[in-house]
Length: 235
Image 1 (cartoon, helix red, strand yellow):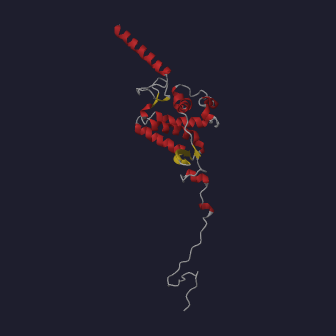
Image 2 (cartoon, rainbow, N blue to C red; image 1 turned 90 degrees about the horizontal axis):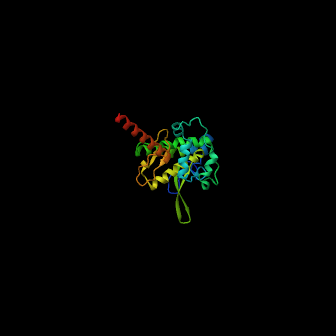
Image 3 (tube, one colour; image 1 turned 120 degrees about the vertical axis):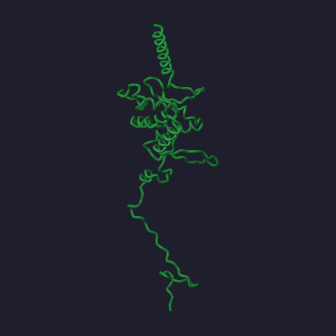
């Protein structure tokens, strides 16, 4: 009996063992391929071509954006109907950061401010952490390592082109909390008609107001209240 020749299904080698036929590679149908946009949206692994390097926003600039463009600070100050400050003015806050960047659109500034204000207004460390995690996810922030010869450094990237400002602002908070993890030092002003945010850098860790203006107003009101109470008790 003649054995099947090489290459046929069920062919046997010289030792009588069955040789399996090698399958041909199958090209996926066009409908099964994932586009670049869907890969980013659906959380597929990112590459240098699908993400952008993020540089941390200067912390004072972050605070200014939240206070001047956030809905909560503007509402508390009775400025909801007032026009927003011109975005071009932000370039004067930190010229080095904006040297090679275009001024963000007003809509982007407002969205960024509204996403970050709740982080400062958190009532506990756990709540602050949860809100930070939400913002990190919204910004599409992911860490990576980069090397120049033997010098290896941390690098952060975002897969969301429309959230680059949020990513830069969030990274600024992460860098700050790495050096000082006490989130109680991220706060909102206790002054009347003010919920502006601030970062407490005072030695005593007792800051309660966004500025000396709000602090002095609060002291003046407290002084007047004490005098009024003393006057009523003397009558």
